[in-house]
Image (cartoon, rainbow, N blue to C red; front, side, top):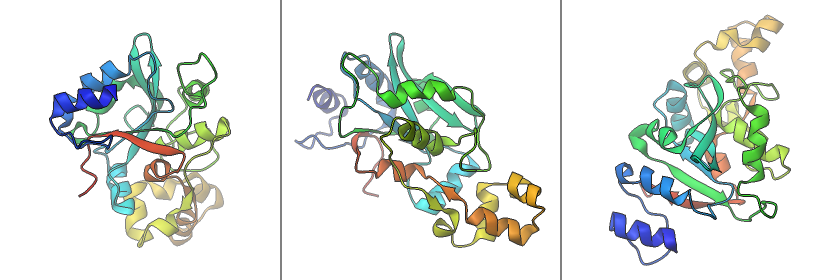
Length: 240
């Protein structure tokens, strides 16, 4: 209720119930930062946003979702940080929460939390946040290959929750997501002909496209839609 009251006063957009609100992102980062210094911050907090990359445009076209990038929040004595894997960082890195928010399109974001608190007694952070350190500095997976030591955005979060035996999200194939592989795959993977499996197997363009389209992938919106998570706070207008 404390956060709700703060939002009501700051945004003047109260609905009379504890429902997510959409508002100008300009006023929110410092407020979110203040809240995450709280002695009992949201547990298992994932933060979703839309980035201005070619990859993000492909995700947006494919899923219709605003969520094209995701990270996991960790609360520290120095403030809240976000562990992520991105094109910009070229792999798994941790950045301050405000910096993460500012990197998003229009500084919009959505925060989801676990429906159950699975933190051990006395632990401030979610087990998935702690598990992220085992992946620190892992390279970015620009080919979206499952089962490698490189990770793209949603794949990192998917793997973190799998490691702690609380899986979220559902993998799918690119073939199930895209209607025109010859058009959409080059948008998602500009140098798709250099895909390691295509090179290793000496596949021609047609066979390479077919191989890539059958790869499994995890999308950010699949994580957000998992029943183990609930929407906690958003600046997106999700009714549009």
